[in-house]
Image (cartoon, rainbow, N blue to C red; front, side):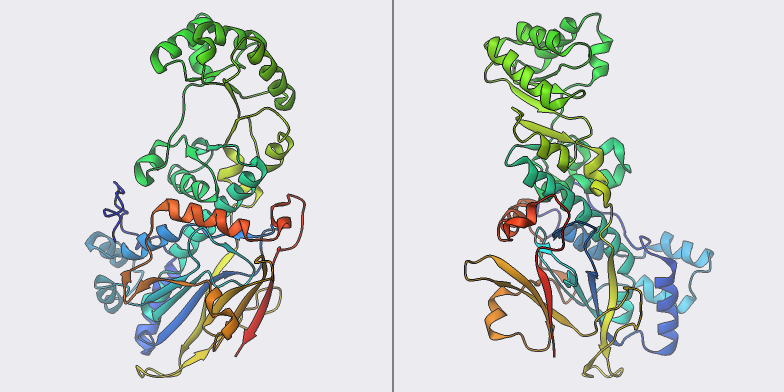
Length: 444
Protein backbone atom coordinates (compact mmCIF):
# COMPACT_ATOMS: atom_id res chain seq x y z
CA UNK A 1 0.00 0.00 0.00
CA UNK A 2 1.41 3.39 -0.99
CA UNK A 3 0.75 6.90 0.24
CA UNK A 4 -1.53 7.32 -2.77
CA UNK A 5 -3.50 4.22 -1.73
CA UNK A 6 -4.14 5.86 1.64
CA UNK A 7 -5.41 9.00 -0.03
CA UNK A 8 -2.49 11.17 1.01
CA UNK A 9 -2.18 14.04 -1.46
CA UNK A 10 1.50 14.88 -1.09
CA UNK A 11 4.43 12.65 -2.02
CA UNK A 12 7.48 12.61 0.22
CA UNK A 13 10.58 13.98 -1.55
CA UNK A 14 13.90 12.17 -1.63
CA UNK A 15 15.22 11.66 1.88
CA UNK A 16 18.73 10.63 0.79
CA UNK A 17 20.47 13.72 2.17
CA UNK A 18 18.57 13.76 5.46
CA UNK A 19 21.68 12.17 6.87
CA UNK A 20 25.03 12.88 8.45
CA UNK A 21 28.16 12.83 6.33
CA UNK A 22 29.77 10.07 8.34
CA UNK A 23 27.07 7.60 7.30
CA UNK A 24 28.38 7.85 3.74
CA UNK A 25 32.07 7.89 4.67
CA UNK A 26 31.48 4.73 6.72
CA UNK A 27 29.81 3.23 3.68
CA UNK A 28 32.80 4.11 1.50
CA UNK A 29 35.24 2.52 3.95
CA UNK A 30 33.06 -0.60 4.27
CA UNK A 31 32.91 -0.97 0.51
CA UNK A 32 36.68 -0.65 0.44
CA UNK A 33 37.16 -3.31 3.15
CA UNK A 34 34.65 -5.71 1.66
CA UNK A 35 32.40 -5.71 4.74
CA UNK A 36 29.62 -3.55 3.28
CA UNK A 37 27.58 -6.58 2.24
CA UNK A 38 27.82 -8.28 5.60
CA UNK A 39 24.38 -9.05 7.07
CA UNK A 40 23.67 -6.69 9.97
CA UNK A 41 21.00 -5.89 12.54
CA UNK A 42 20.46 -2.37 13.85
CA UNK A 43 18.04 -1.44 16.62
CA UNK A 44 16.56 1.91 17.63
CA UNK A 45 15.91 2.30 21.35
CA UNK A 46 16.30 4.69 24.23
CA UNK A 47 18.30 3.97 27.35
CA UNK A 48 16.02 6.08 29.53
CA UNK A 49 12.81 8.04 29.38
CA UNK A 50 12.88 11.83 29.70
CA UNK A 51 13.06 12.92 33.31
CA UNK A 52 9.76 12.37 35.08
CA UNK A 53 8.00 10.58 32.23
CA UNK A 54 6.27 7.31 33.08
CA UNK A 55 6.02 5.93 29.52
CA UNK A 56 6.96 6.82 25.95
CA UNK A 57 4.75 6.85 22.86
CA UNK A 58 5.83 5.45 19.50
CA UNK A 59 5.13 7.98 16.75
CA UNK A 60 6.63 8.63 13.35
CA UNK A 61 6.63 5.02 12.16
CA UNK A 62 4.56 5.85 9.10
CA UNK A 63 6.90 8.71 8.25
CA UNK A 64 9.89 6.39 8.69
CA UNK A 65 8.38 4.01 6.14
CA UNK A 66 7.93 6.91 3.71
CA UNK A 67 11.55 7.94 4.33
CA UNK A 68 12.88 4.45 3.62
CA UNK A 69 10.82 4.16 0.46
CA UNK A 70 12.06 7.55 -0.76
CA UNK A 71 15.72 7.11 0.18
CA UNK A 72 17.00 7.56 -3.38
CA UNK A 73 20.11 9.22 -4.79
CA UNK A 74 19.14 10.99 -8.00
CA UNK A 75 21.51 12.79 -10.39
CA UNK A 76 21.50 16.21 -8.65
CA UNK A 77 22.20 14.59 -5.28
CA UNK A 78 25.02 12.47 -6.70
CA UNK A 79 26.46 15.54 -8.42
CA UNK A 80 26.46 17.37 -5.09
CA UNK A 81 28.27 14.50 -3.36
CA UNK A 82 30.79 14.35 -6.17
CA UNK A 83 31.35 18.10 -6.25
CA UNK A 84 31.86 18.29 -2.49
CA UNK A 85 34.17 15.28 -2.47
CA UNK A 86 32.05 13.51 0.14
CA UNK A 87 32.66 10.00 -1.25
CA UNK A 88 34.56 8.37 -4.09
CA UNK A 89 33.25 7.15 -7.45
CA UNK A 90 32.82 3.55 -6.31
CA UNK A 91 30.55 4.73 -3.51
CA UNK A 92 28.64 7.06 -5.82
CA UNK A 93 28.02 4.14 -8.16
CA UNK A 94 26.65 2.12 -5.24
CA UNK A 95 24.42 4.99 -4.11
CA UNK A 96 23.04 5.52 -7.62
CA UNK A 97 21.41 2.11 -7.39
CA UNK A 98 20.57 2.22 -3.68
CA UNK A 99 17.36 0.51 -2.65
CA UNK A 100 16.67 -0.88 0.78
CA UNK A 101 16.03 -4.60 0.29
CA UNK A 102 16.04 -5.76 3.90
CA UNK A 103 13.46 -6.23 6.66
CA UNK A 104 12.20 -3.86 9.30
CA UNK A 105 10.30 -4.82 12.43
CA UNK A 106 9.04 -2.41 15.04
CA UNK A 107 6.58 -1.47 17.73
CA UNK A 108 3.38 -0.43 15.93
CA UNK A 109 2.71 3.29 15.87
CA UNK A 110 0.74 4.52 18.87
CA UNK A 111 2.10 1.80 21.17
CA UNK A 112 3.87 2.75 24.39
CA UNK A 113 7.49 1.91 25.13
CA UNK A 114 10.03 1.86 27.96
CA UNK A 115 13.82 2.01 28.43
CA UNK A 116 15.50 -0.59 26.26
CA UNK A 117 12.44 -1.34 24.11
CA UNK A 118 13.69 -2.22 20.59
CA UNK A 119 11.32 0.21 18.87
CA UNK A 120 12.70 -0.49 15.42
CA UNK A 121 14.83 -3.39 14.18
CA UNK A 122 16.44 -2.91 10.77
CA UNK A 123 17.97 -5.98 9.11
CA UNK A 124 19.91 -5.96 5.86
CA UNK A 125 23.43 -5.49 4.63
CA UNK A 126 25.56 -3.06 6.59
CA UNK A 127 25.62 -0.76 3.59
CA UNK A 128 21.88 -0.44 3.15
CA UNK A 129 21.03 -0.26 6.87
CA UNK A 130 23.69 2.11 8.20
CA UNK A 131 22.76 5.01 5.93
CA UNK A 132 19.23 5.09 7.36
CA UNK A 133 20.38 5.95 10.88
CA UNK A 134 20.02 9.72 10.85
CA UNK A 135 16.67 10.01 9.11
CA UNK A 136 15.17 7.24 11.25
CA UNK A 137 16.30 8.88 14.47
CA UNK A 138 15.32 12.40 13.45
CA UNK A 139 11.76 11.24 12.77
CA UNK A 140 11.32 8.95 15.77
CA UNK A 141 12.93 11.32 18.27
CA UNK A 142 10.82 14.27 17.19
CA UNK A 143 7.47 12.60 16.64
CA UNK A 144 7.61 10.38 19.73
CA UNK A 145 8.42 13.39 21.92
CA UNK A 146 5.39 15.27 20.61
CA UNK A 147 3.12 12.23 20.94
CA UNK A 148 4.23 11.66 24.54
CA UNK A 149 3.44 15.26 25.44
CA UNK A 150 0.09 14.98 23.64
CA UNK A 151 -0.72 11.78 25.51
CA UNK A 152 -0.08 13.40 28.88
CA UNK A 153 -2.27 16.34 27.90
CA UNK A 154 -5.03 14.05 26.68
CA UNK A 155 -4.96 12.15 29.96
CA UNK A 156 -5.12 15.43 31.89
CA UNK A 157 -8.02 16.65 29.73
CA UNK A 158 -10.13 13.68 30.78
CA UNK A 159 -11.96 13.29 27.47
CA UNK A 160 -12.41 16.97 26.66
CA UNK A 161 -11.31 17.79 23.10
CA UNK A 162 -7.78 19.04 22.46
CA UNK A 163 -6.82 21.21 19.47
CA UNK A 164 -3.24 21.52 18.24
CA UNK A 165 -2.26 25.13 17.49
CA UNK A 166 1.54 25.12 17.47
CA UNK A 167 2.49 25.81 13.85
CA UNK A 168 3.88 29.28 14.57
CA UNK A 169 6.08 27.99 17.38
CA UNK A 170 8.29 25.60 15.44
CA UNK A 171 9.87 24.99 12.02
CA UNK A 172 7.26 24.99 9.27
CA UNK A 173 7.88 21.36 8.29
CA UNK A 174 8.27 20.18 11.88
CA UNK A 175 4.87 21.74 12.55
CA UNK A 176 3.23 19.34 10.08
CA UNK A 177 4.90 16.33 11.68
CA UNK A 178 3.95 17.65 15.13
CA UNK A 179 0.29 17.86 14.12
CA UNK A 180 0.40 14.23 13.01
CA UNK A 181 2.11 13.08 16.21
CA UNK A 182 -0.28 15.07 18.39
CA UNK A 183 -3.23 13.38 16.68
CA UNK A 184 -1.76 9.97 17.51
CA UNK A 185 -1.29 11.07 21.13
CA UNK A 186 -4.92 12.08 21.56
CA UNK A 187 -5.52 15.51 19.99
CA UNK A 188 -8.62 15.73 17.83
CA UNK A 189 -7.77 18.49 15.38
CA UNK A 190 -5.13 20.94 14.20
CA UNK A 191 -4.99 24.54 13.05
CA UNK A 192 -2.35 23.56 10.49
CA UNK A 193 -3.79 23.33 6.98
CA UNK A 194 -0.67 21.60 5.65
CA UNK A 195 -1.27 18.81 8.16
CA UNK A 196 -4.88 18.58 7.05
CA UNK A 197 -3.80 18.40 3.42
CA UNK A 198 -0.96 15.94 3.95
CA UNK A 199 -2.54 13.60 6.51
CA UNK A 200 -6.26 14.25 6.36
CA UNK A 201 -6.40 15.64 9.90
CA UNK A 202 -9.50 17.60 10.94
CA UNK A 203 -8.64 21.33 10.91
CA UNK A 204 -10.07 24.14 13.03
CA UNK A 205 -9.80 27.91 13.33
CA UNK A 206 -11.92 31.08 13.28
CA UNK A 207 -10.28 34.40 14.17
CA UNK A 208 -7.50 36.11 16.13
CA UNK A 209 -7.37 39.36 18.07
CA UNK A 210 -6.27 41.13 14.90
CA UNK A 211 -9.72 40.59 13.40
CA UNK A 212 -11.41 42.32 16.34
CA UNK A 213 -8.87 45.14 16.33
CA UNK A 214 -9.41 45.65 12.60
CA UNK A 215 -13.01 46.73 13.17
CA UNK A 216 -14.21 49.96 14.74
CA UNK A 217 -16.15 48.10 17.42
CA UNK A 218 -16.11 44.64 18.92
CA UNK A 219 -19.75 44.27 17.97
CA UNK A 220 -18.87 45.06 14.39
CA UNK A 221 -16.19 42.37 14.38
CA UNK A 222 -18.51 39.77 15.91
CA UNK A 223 -21.28 40.66 13.46
CA UNK A 224 -18.94 40.26 10.49
CA UNK A 225 -17.70 36.89 11.72
CA UNK A 226 -21.17 35.52 12.44
CA UNK A 227 -22.49 36.70 9.08
CA UNK A 228 -19.54 35.03 7.35
CA UNK A 229 -19.09 31.83 9.36
CA UNK A 230 -22.51 31.26 10.93
CA UNK A 231 -23.90 31.37 14.44
CA UNK A 232 -22.09 28.20 15.48
CA UNK A 233 -18.71 29.91 15.14
CA UNK A 234 -16.31 30.56 18.03
CA UNK A 235 -15.93 34.20 19.08
CA UNK A 236 -12.76 35.41 20.80
CA UNK A 237 -13.88 37.36 23.89
CA UNK A 238 -10.75 38.64 25.63
CA UNK A 239 -9.57 41.43 23.31
CA UNK A 240 -10.98 44.10 25.64
CA UNK A 241 -13.34 43.27 28.52
CA UNK A 242 -14.46 39.65 28.75
CA UNK A 243 -17.85 40.20 30.37
CA UNK A 244 -18.76 42.90 27.84
CA UNK A 245 -17.60 40.73 24.97
CA UNK A 246 -19.65 37.73 26.12
CA UNK A 247 -22.76 39.87 26.38
CA UNK A 248 -22.10 41.32 22.91
CA UNK A 249 -21.42 37.87 21.46
CA UNK A 250 -24.76 36.49 22.60
CA UNK A 251 -26.50 39.66 21.47
CA UNK A 252 -25.05 39.22 17.97
CA UNK A 253 -25.27 35.44 17.56
CA UNK A 254 -28.09 34.59 19.91
CA UNK A 255 -28.25 31.46 22.04
CA UNK A 256 -27.12 29.44 19.03
CA UNK A 257 -23.57 30.81 19.43
CA UNK A 258 -21.22 27.85 19.08
CA UNK A 259 -18.45 28.81 21.47
CA UNK A 260 -16.44 31.59 23.03
CA UNK A 261 -12.65 31.46 23.33
CA UNK A 262 -10.62 32.83 26.24
CA UNK A 263 -6.94 33.37 25.47
CA UNK A 264 -5.60 35.26 28.51
CA UNK A 265 -6.09 35.99 32.18
CA UNK A 266 -7.00 33.74 35.07
CA UNK A 267 -8.54 30.95 33.03
CA UNK A 268 -10.00 29.10 36.00
CA UNK A 269 -11.79 32.16 37.34
CA UNK A 270 -12.83 33.42 33.91
CA UNK A 271 -14.21 30.06 32.85
CA UNK A 272 -16.55 29.96 35.85
CA UNK A 273 -17.65 33.56 35.35
CA UNK A 274 -18.21 33.14 31.61
CA UNK A 275 -20.18 29.92 32.10
CA UNK A 276 -22.46 31.62 34.59
CA UNK A 277 -22.88 34.62 32.31
CA UNK A 278 -23.67 32.48 29.26
CA UNK A 279 -26.26 30.51 31.23
CA UNK A 280 -27.85 33.69 32.52
CA UNK A 281 -28.07 35.01 28.95
CA UNK A 282 -29.83 31.86 27.78
CA UNK A 283 -26.79 30.49 25.91
CA UNK A 284 -26.51 27.33 27.95
CA UNK A 285 -25.29 25.27 25.00
CA UNK A 286 -22.52 27.70 24.03
CA UNK A 287 -19.17 26.05 24.73
CA UNK A 288 -16.07 27.56 26.32
CA UNK A 289 -12.68 27.05 24.66
CA UNK A 290 -9.48 28.08 26.45
CA UNK A 291 -6.03 28.61 24.98
CA UNK A 292 -3.10 30.70 26.35
CA UNK A 293 0.18 28.76 26.70
CA UNK A 294 -1.38 25.61 28.12
CA UNK A 295 0.52 22.47 29.07
CA UNK A 296 -0.56 19.26 30.82
CA UNK A 297 -0.27 20.87 34.25
CA UNK A 298 -2.42 23.85 33.29
CA UNK A 299 -4.96 21.51 31.71
CA UNK A 300 -5.07 19.40 34.86
CA UNK A 301 -5.60 22.54 36.97
CA UNK A 302 -8.71 23.29 34.89
CA UNK A 303 -10.27 19.87 35.44
CA UNK A 304 -12.97 21.31 37.71
CA UNK A 305 -13.61 24.33 35.49
CA UNK A 306 -16.52 24.49 33.01
CA UNK A 307 -14.18 24.23 30.03
CA UNK A 308 -15.29 22.33 26.94
CA UNK A 309 -12.10 22.25 24.87
CA UNK A 310 -8.43 23.23 25.00
CA UNK A 311 -6.14 24.68 22.36
CA UNK A 312 -2.44 23.99 22.88
CA UNK A 313 0.55 25.34 20.95
CA UNK A 314 4.07 26.01 22.22
CA UNK A 315 4.27 23.37 24.94
CA UNK A 316 2.94 20.65 22.68
CA UNK A 317 5.18 21.17 19.65
CA UNK A 318 8.28 21.43 21.88
CA UNK A 319 7.52 18.19 23.71
CA UNK A 320 6.43 19.99 26.87
CA UNK A 321 10.01 20.45 28.01
CA UNK A 322 11.38 17.29 26.37
CA UNK A 323 11.74 17.90 22.61
CA UNK A 324 13.61 14.65 22.00
CA UNK A 325 13.48 11.10 23.31
CA UNK A 326 17.24 10.43 23.22
CA UNK A 327 16.75 7.43 20.94
CA UNK A 328 19.83 5.83 19.41
CA UNK A 329 20.37 3.48 16.46
CA UNK A 330 22.95 0.82 17.20
CA UNK A 331 24.47 -2.15 15.44
CA UNK A 332 23.58 -5.08 17.73
CA UNK A 333 24.48 -8.07 15.55
CA UNK A 334 26.34 -8.83 12.34
CA UNK A 335 27.25 -11.92 10.38
CA UNK A 336 30.35 -13.78 11.50
CA UNK A 337 31.71 -13.60 7.95
CA UNK A 338 30.82 -12.40 4.47
CA UNK A 339 29.20 -15.73 3.63
CA UNK A 340 25.42 -15.42 2.97
CA UNK A 341 24.53 -18.07 5.56
CA UNK A 342 27.03 -16.99 8.22
CA UNK A 343 25.48 -16.92 11.71
CA UNK A 344 24.80 -13.63 13.46
CA UNK A 345 27.20 -12.55 16.19
CA UNK A 346 26.01 -10.16 18.94
CA UNK A 347 28.03 -6.94 19.07
CA UNK A 348 27.90 -3.98 21.45
CA UNK A 349 29.97 -0.95 22.34
CA UNK A 350 31.70 -1.18 25.70
CA UNK A 351 31.20 2.11 27.44
CA UNK A 352 30.72 3.75 30.81
CA UNK A 353 28.74 6.84 31.69
CA UNK A 354 25.29 5.50 30.84
CA UNK A 355 26.00 4.72 27.19
CA UNK A 356 26.12 0.95 27.44
CA UNK A 357 24.31 -1.15 24.85
CA UNK A 358 23.20 -4.77 24.84
CA UNK A 359 24.17 -6.86 21.83
CA UNK A 360 22.05 -9.40 20.01
CA UNK A 361 18.95 -9.41 17.81
CA UNK A 362 16.18 -8.88 20.33
CA UNK A 363 12.48 -9.50 20.74
CA UNK A 364 10.15 -7.72 23.15
CA UNK A 365 6.98 -8.75 24.93
CA UNK A 366 4.72 -7.19 27.52
CA UNK A 367 3.78 -9.32 30.49
CA UNK A 368 0.37 -8.79 32.06
CA UNK A 369 -0.73 -9.43 35.63
CA UNK A 370 -3.71 -11.58 36.58
CA UNK A 371 -6.05 -8.63 35.97
CA UNK A 372 -4.77 -8.05 32.45
CA UNK A 373 -2.79 -4.92 33.38
CA UNK A 374 0.75 -4.57 32.03
CA UNK A 375 3.38 -5.26 34.68
CA UNK A 376 6.71 -5.59 32.84
CA UNK A 377 8.46 -4.96 29.52
CA UNK A 378 10.38 -8.13 28.76
CA UNK A 379 13.25 -7.94 26.27
CA UNK A 380 15.28 -10.91 25.18
CA UNK A 381 17.34 -12.67 22.56
CA UNK A 382 17.03 -16.27 21.52
CA UNK A 383 13.79 -18.24 21.88
CA UNK A 384 10.70 -16.42 23.14
CA UNK A 385 9.22 -18.06 26.26
CA UNK A 386 5.97 -19.87 25.53
CA UNK A 387 3.98 -17.71 27.94
CA UNK A 388 5.04 -14.54 26.14
CA UNK A 389 4.62 -15.58 22.50
CA UNK A 390 1.18 -14.03 22.24
CA UNK A 391 2.37 -10.80 23.85
CA UNK A 392 5.19 -9.89 21.46
CA UNK A 393 5.48 -6.22 20.57
CA UNK A 394 7.32 -6.11 17.24
CA UNK A 395 5.36 -6.33 14.00
CA UNK A 396 6.64 -6.52 10.39
CA UNK A 397 6.95 -3.13 8.72
CA UNK A 398 9.18 -3.87 5.71
CA UNK A 399 9.73 -7.31 4.18
CA UNK A 400 12.34 -7.81 1.48
CA UNK A 401 12.37 -4.08 0.82
CA UNK A 402 8.59 -3.87 0.37
CA UNK A 403 6.55 -1.75 2.78
CA UNK A 404 4.02 -3.99 4.56
CA UNK A 405 3.26 -1.99 7.69
CA UNK A 406 1.42 1.10 6.46
CA UNK A 407 -1.91 1.81 8.10
CA UNK A 408 -4.39 4.68 8.44
CA UNK A 409 -3.48 7.27 11.07
CA UNK A 410 -6.68 6.56 12.97
CA UNK A 411 -5.44 3.01 13.62
CA UNK A 412 -2.37 4.37 15.43
CA UNK A 413 -4.52 6.82 17.37
CA UNK A 414 -6.90 4.06 18.48
CA UNK A 415 -3.98 1.81 19.38
CA UNK A 416 -2.52 4.44 21.65
CA UNK A 417 -5.78 4.87 23.55
CA UNK A 418 -5.89 1.12 24.10
CA UNK A 419 -2.20 0.85 25.02
CA UNK A 420 -2.39 3.65 27.59
CA UNK A 421 -5.52 2.15 29.09
CA UNK A 422 -3.64 -1.12 29.57
CA UNK A 423 -1.00 0.46 31.81
CA UNK A 424 -1.21 0.80 35.59
CA UNK A 425 -3.29 3.79 36.70
CA UNK A 426 -0.18 5.60 37.93
CA UNK A 427 1.02 5.91 34.32
CA UNK A 428 -1.04 9.08 33.83
CA UNK A 429 0.01 10.80 37.04
CA UNK A 430 1.75 14.08 36.33
CA UNK A 431 3.95 13.88 39.39
CA UNK A 432 7.54 12.85 38.75
CA UNK A 433 8.25 9.16 38.88
CA UNK A 434 10.07 6.23 37.37
CA UNK A 435 8.83 4.35 34.29
CA UNK A 436 5.54 2.73 35.16
CA UNK A 437 6.83 -0.64 33.89
CA UNK A 438 10.23 -2.06 34.72
CA UNK A 439 12.33 -3.66 31.99
CA UNK A 440 13.41 -7.29 32.32
CA UNK A 441 16.10 -8.84 30.14
CA UNK A 442 16.11 -12.51 29.07
CA UNK A 443 19.30 -12.84 27.07
CA UNK A 444 19.99 -16.16 25.48
